[in-house]
Length: 394
Image 1 (cartoon, rainbow, N blue to C red):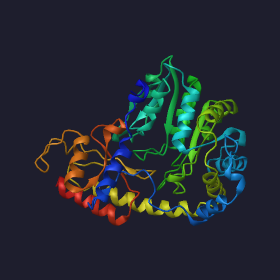
Image 2 (cartoon, helix red, strand yellow; image 1 turned 120 degrees about the vertical axis):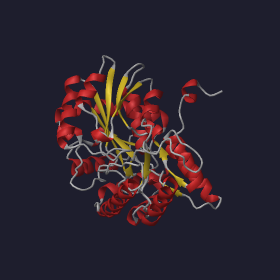
Image 3 (cartoon, rainbow, N blue to C red; image 1 turned 45 degrees about the vertical axis):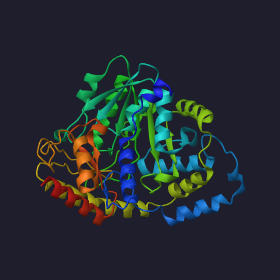
Image 4 (cartoon, rainbow, N blue to C red; image 1 turned 30 degrees about the horizontal axis):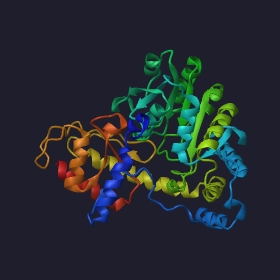
């Protein structure tokens, strides 16, 4: 029998939906999946070439320093200065097995049993599971379309208790695509500083921002908060490298040293070949990122319009990342293909069964009545999938 701690974990709904969609495709079904949280582009060729060369580099056939290759830690520090304006040293960087691992290291190093962590909802599915595994308690703070899916300082202050240890801050957001303005970031950063709590800020979508919106790094906007701030990032989204599994956490030297010690006993070093590929990625220009962003920008506008054209569906135009997060409240209770879905969970099952369209229900993100649609898929599949959904709900 597995431990109670492990039995309490909920399977990742996004990965589960994608697994079902892939299984149906393997059976010959023409499934359009809006579930994937990864770019549909290949990793740029110069990065792949660097990995091939690294395979022949004999020192990489052996263990390397647990916190990461020294040259990669230094390059990440430089990339961080270049892209967000945050000045850090290589000793403040820990290279991890993807962004998830960076988050888990951060939470494990930060949270003691009974600590409370403030988490604005809708939230990415893995945050509460990680917090729970570390003995913490998630305090979810609801946001809505009307607030632009952004939390306010008033909400944060109302939820704060003596047990509050940290805030999870994400901009651009998965699943809503919300992007906080520099002024909003500053207000939240100053609040956290005055409250004496830590901020774990996930910046994995930093380069995927559209229109007049701009990315702002909290420890840059509020420099005084740096000593109580942990930044998580990685190569997955910006460089189309989800499968390479390279992320990092950045924070005060003492916190990074503690997390490095933890990693030394759990995974040791990240794959050297993947680290070499990541080194080439972060050391290079952002040309490939710009090309992806242009495609995502086009798709987000198409998806937002098509979703809003479906009767009963309401979708706020996303400002960043590559997701739309529409409300299906106007659809609930209607008769659809002989059924009356009363939740986005039931609606998602109906869409997959009847229209062969895979979406992730909002319950997974702490937002019943909504669903997440990734627009990291081809323009043709995007239009076809939404056409099918429109026919089903029409």
